[in-house]
Length: 222
Length: 222
Image 1 (cartoon, one colour):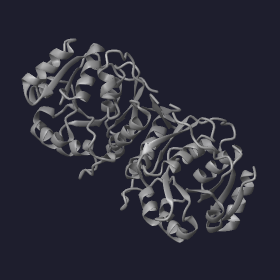
Image 2 (cartoon, one colour; image 1 turned 180 degrees about the vertical axis):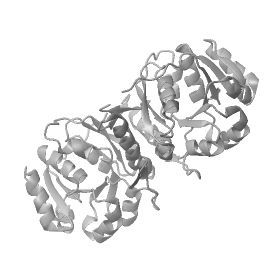
Image 3 (tube, one colour; image 1 turned 90 degrees about the horizontal axis):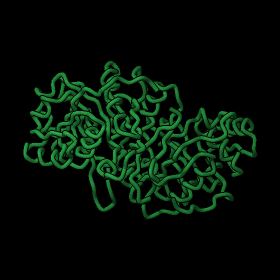
Image 4 (tube, one colour; image 1 turned 120 degrees about the horizontal axis):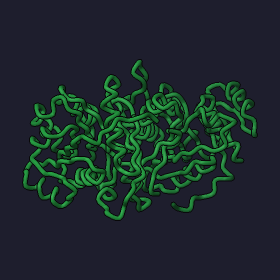
């Protein structure tokens, strides 16, 4: 494994931070000592979620959240992904934007991957946010475990994908992942290979049903 | 985890068993005491590979391999996948067919997932082999490790996908996986979620390049 940069001085914004995945990440990052801002369409809802989490978490509307943060995590529902990012293109310019959205459908047979015109949620983000540095990560985190106060450590390798020419961005996000006890940030390839990482959540949902678990992933031999 | 059936009396056929992945699986299954038949288009090439492996492995042409085996693993190159299965539809009728093919392309930026009309190699197999019981598994095995005589145990969770109404088939393939020391067979969902499991090999190739490893996958919390 490689030396990763220090992210301790950065402010982390989480768009859609009132959802379980976003709130769970906000909680863990705040517990690790990072400054965290939850974003939501309505500032009041963001403030409510922030108050619930404590640990210095602030709540702002998505636009202010994007403006005031150094790294911005996109944790909005897939249905609102495109419109949210289009509306924040200016605020997100020049920033590292971390997409953790999983485009999934559900029916009586369980979860399945939805087709995405651009290939993946991350590639859709990159197509919209041409002035940002888009990274994909945090797809396989269990919101249940992130939010559980009885869970101190979560075994998970966070696959971090980005463009090969911007290693600084993926290194920073790997370092961000490692703020959570038990998480390891692992480079997982380019954005063109993001679809399968997003879609694998459908398989994890099947695993969780079969084994009554909150399954995550570890990579062996690294 | 659940109790899995006994597969010790079964004969395992491996179509495309002269390639590294097929030969590696043949080697490990034979070492575990199973009867193994390597299949190839040319019986002589299959026989050569079998002689190389020893441990009672036999080599036959693909058709005879399919006929004489209880469980048939498809390890042919993606380019020959459709034609091979179409030509063996009769021989494979009524059998468990385990697809481990990863449809990948390669360019100077590395590996990437190829689009598959049916959704995945496994779904293509199921569409062709309407009288067989198609299961997807063994995508993430490292041929290098399988073939390395210095490696006794390989840490890997083998994701096994199949149709929900045929649990017997996925249970048998999970049990087959567990013949290899270090492998654990884990149910990974339905065939409609096979694409991302196949495509994830592109990410593992990126991981291997970055970390100089032969990465596999473990699922946590199960």
